[in-house]
Image 1 (tube, rainbow, N blue to C red):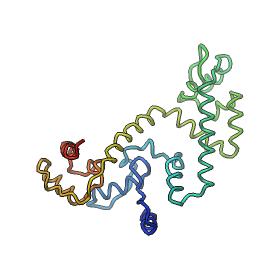
Image 2: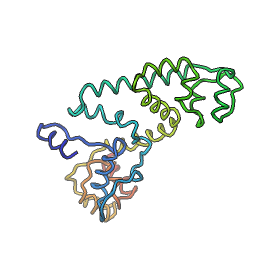
Image 3: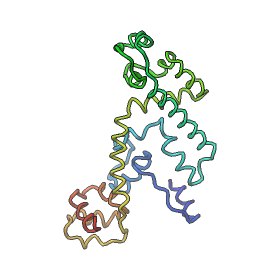
Length: 241
């Protein structure tokens, strides 16, 4: 990250900053800057509030396009990501649109350790069941087999991405909503040279911490140890929010 930003500064470009919902290194840097350390710092996954978003399988989704914008990722990698997205969407669209009859799937469901169907059901509802593995379901439905075969060598990667997307859909959506709320605070910028000692309505500890760390946004200020929600409210009122 230091090398990237050194290069961008020489080129006269805007700095490259990864958020806490974009990468673990974003969490690490934000922790070191806003919270400080009294002992050696170790990057535990528990330090990240958006662990469902920061998965190993979606690193390309999170970072490839950002990398391409600053000249690190080649067009070939961006194209691979586009193809992956198209294949994942094809899988999910088929699962949402295709209905499966009990006589066609019940034997497989009972073999998988889950209850049989009593009537037709959208295939995506079957795929969401914890006992049903998508790579096994593919072998039971002809339409899925065709999409699977079109994935070629990337079939395993696509199957994994689809399975996570459908089975954790609710959790992922909830975490994205939380991240979006925090991003709104990140967009409210603070002047790094602002004199916080003028704000007598916030606590002495908050004034000291804000003056020392000099946060660039309300979001960053809210994560500083010793800065309370009431202190953030005062900052927002002062800024006319």
